Image (tube, rainbow, N blue to C red; front, top):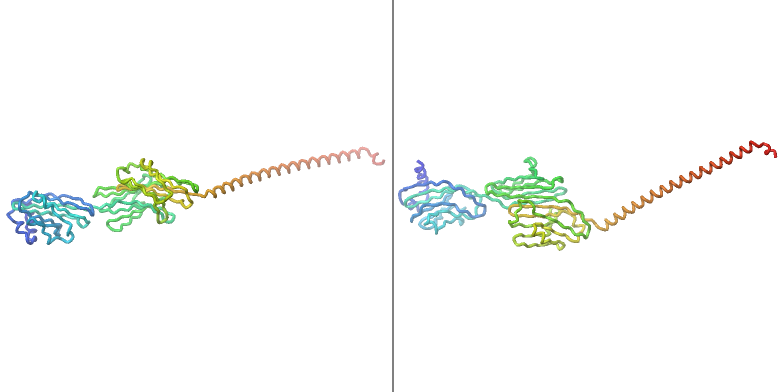
Length: 401
């Protein structure tokens, strides 16, 4: 019954092959084989081979079909493309040099998402006819990007990815998984491109974004870390460190390191490093790399002769096809003259306060001593008056004289 059903499919299909169906039925079928389906996974924009094999004989008819669309046909040692669907024009080919070896595989170039589906490979020879079934799945995973942005007083992290099918995206903060209800905004521009944004809070010092495409078995991880603020004086030098310490960051991959200063809505690139060529490019004359540290996976950058305008956030971005690591550090630059003036004012206030306290206690002691002297004088005067009065009272005769 199974063989009869497959034969029926072939007999229905064959009359539609105008011009060569007689060759397809060169002889009564001695064997009809329905091979088990094969699953082939391709990447968007790349080429793929849909496999199909048979036992070769001199006379061969090959026909590839996707549902009702004719993909590619072969008849009398030549391609037959008159009925080929326009979507496959100039994108298909057979391996002509290997057909006599039993290879009827189809090469399909520049895959699109519309190419997904079930493909049937029909092969007819003088003694047998076969049908091979191939399921083509097309996936896409354009290297994701993690971006750090500032808007007004808030800071955001955005994970952007172009993926098909829809990827799995997870967030962590300080090694704690963020629940679905607390995740940021999701913006789907189409079925292909996804942006996920999350608000950075001041209490969290690290974030991680993981993206997975299950069809292509491909993952990507982005990390963001904040370092302590630094305070510097004008004309000093400022050194920024950006190290690869996490095990997910593999140095055997090609990667790019970019240092930039983050402004509101924009950012300005200071320098970048390409691991593939071991070259550095510097855009700010006051910036220098430490090559010894680069060899130790520490992308140490020095900004010389600081200005007050250099105050702000500095971002180190280390990116490859499998990861991105963002490190941010805030710099505060103050005027030296203002700092010296401030110290002089503070010192003057201390000295003035000390002198005022000394004067206060000196005046207090002086007034106290004065009151004591005045009290002693008054007491002595009262004593003299009392003695004189007493003497006058005890010798009345002296009053008559």
